[in-house]
Image (tube, rainbow, N blue to C red):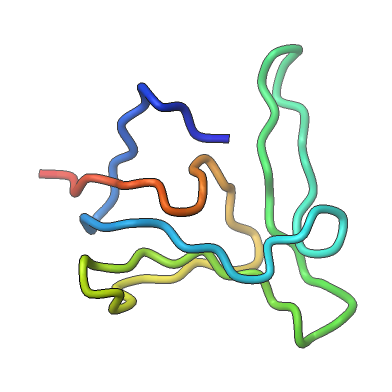
Length: 84
């Protein structure tokens, strides 16, 4: 979903990791325009499959996580930069 040329800004610098991001079960695609679609996490029926989008540092330590209701605009393992 993220673009190679896009710079993703966050309150943290790190990489993105996904957990339980499963189409139709933990996220749905919403059409924003003819060319633009966005993934949005949702509550799954299986409570063992809660969606998580994590920002981890270079050592793999979790700095922040996002769950149900999050809009996914990045790919797993994509690098993000901190807002200055």
